[in-house]
Length: 454
Ligand code: GLN
Image (cartoon, rainbow, N blue to C red; front, side, top):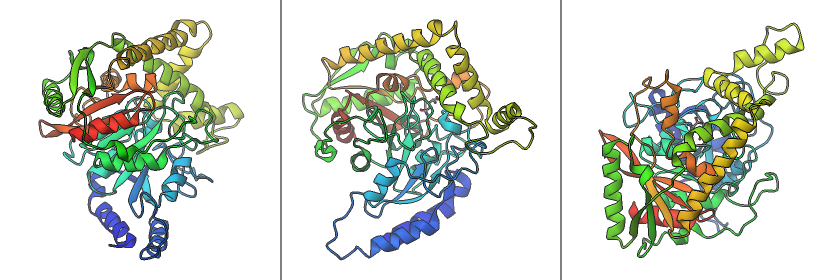
């Protein structure tokens, strides 16, 4: 099989199914086919092969790609053509993957269903009536539907793991700082992290290996030695200590989802792992803390979209203030506006101490809960999401219910630690995801357990 043939298969599959699924916002066919031809010239030679040689990939549309519109699924950026590549995009190229196009998402990564895309919602390949999850909706659906071999998404409060769970694939949020955020359009800078969505754990390890590493262009990038993630995939979890937080299996979690997680635990125990119940006492504050902090950071990050420097400018302005006001009113969708207003309110003088500062303190307590558990355990385990994928339209009018879908993924972002979602069966005909959470920079333990279970 040549790379050109692989890339051709990818585009044929996209042509066949994407009209229904809506995973892609933009294809880059000419460039991808050209890249494929040049990689084909390498076949049969002794030139060293990249780790992802010839694999067709999709990239979430909040990751900038030179000469390929990067819209964040927002009207505001519908005409934004970046003049540079994100570090992860360069790294995919260095690993010799082929980027076939840009993937749909919730606008500016705000959402958990894909329905906040200003273009059109993505649908779940397992059942087109259901959402694929979000915000990396296209990234998950494209892999699940076999349109690409893997994709990149971003995860601020669950946006890789939750859609991976809903679409029955693997998705990983790495430790904060492990993957460069240079070229990721910022939502909440202290939480955002790019990561892989793949069909299985081995592929996840390959993609992770290819995108990690220190980047001087990202001031929060970690300067650490990178382990060989593939060597963690031994299948051996004997004696490994696994913590099951009672808060992750309590009220609000669908009984069928709980049952799948219990079965997963039995499998891991059968492999010799030790599973014990623990408590993460501050879990109940995670959602409130996250929505304060993420919205605050978003209100600051999104201030750059003023109709002057980026994106679409209003036609309807006779002075500068109108340019700002009308460009933002016309360009942003309702959820983005909601976050900006919440965040601006929380940061305003007089409220800062009561909201933002308080939330930062609770964030520290949530991180400490994990530190305490990790003093005695190798990984923490639970469901990725409280329910399987819900129906399109079911939660759009109800932002609070939508926010609760992230109750199990958000604590991980607040603590800055790594976690993966791996398929663990079905409930009502839809996939269920098992979440495995690790210590900071211990992606290897997370991958080891996920791989052994899978
Ligand atoms: N669903 C969460 C939100 O709407 C998480 C989003 C994300 O991780 N980007 O903020």
